[in-house]
Image (cartoon, rainbow, N blue to C red; front, top):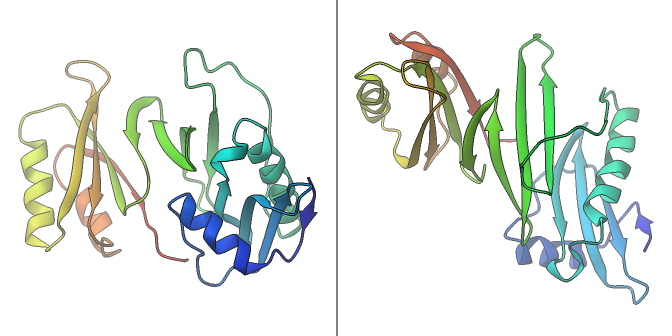
Length: 216
């Protein structure tokens, strides 16, 4: 297996499509891991210091190609200003292909995420800031942390309906009765940036995190 700095797009696109992904616009760097026969086994790209379009052919999963590819991409991204630290930790009974990420934005906001590879090039988010969740990240997603009191779901869904935002799926989680709860809402379209602070102003809402699919 070996890397190439300019992987042929004719091989990358079919592999991404095989894994249910597509080539994002504006990527600046693409790497691939090939078999000795010249077949593309894994690929990933960078846009600035952001890693995108990472895929491993199902025939080669379980060969630690994802780890090798991410190590390579993170090394390149670090040269572009990404600051990171990788270390081993015990995640208990989490899925064996799991990683825990602590992300800190330029504004100082932090979020901890546990995600896992469930096969077929699919990634699933399993935990956010200590609360169990389960969603793919394939759609624009709102993660709303709220007080566990009556009327919260109706308040949020009514607000989104009034703003013409259609809900694709919605999941509810809580750590204990009366503690904070979480709504995970996958939307059919992007949520306008102006709506996120408005959601945070609703009564009983503790925090709103929005996962956008738009290129920043």
